[in-house]
Amino acid sequence: MPLSSIASAIVSSIITNAIEAPSAPVAPVHAALERHFPEGTETGLLAGAPDMMGNVRINDKILPASPGLQIRDEMNLIVFPSMIGNDVPIRYQLDPVGTVWRIWVMSPAEVAAFNP
Image 1 (tube, one colour):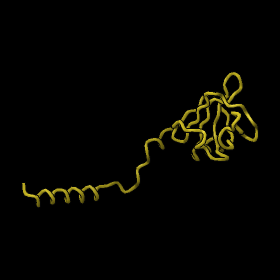
Image 2: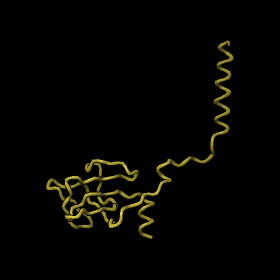
Image 3: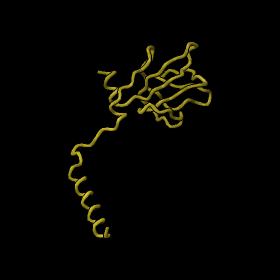
Image 4: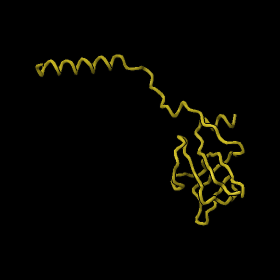
């Protein structure tokens, strides 16, 4: 097969795919998924990462953080505490001894759903 035929087939394929491309952007899969929070979680504002003593400030209250504290971002991925900004809307859960052991950073859509 001559090189010109191959180049012509490639260009034709690119043009065909560009014409048939969807007009509206496709939402990422994670945007379509709804997160379900466990029973007993509370809503609050997290004022940054845990301090050197292992405490977190939520809704202007200082709460002890569990040694196994797990923080998940809007896409439900585990993140380091240093990756969290200030005054971040969250859902959080306390363990049986009263320490914060799970934090979920809420997306704007989740905030709107919990605060109609």
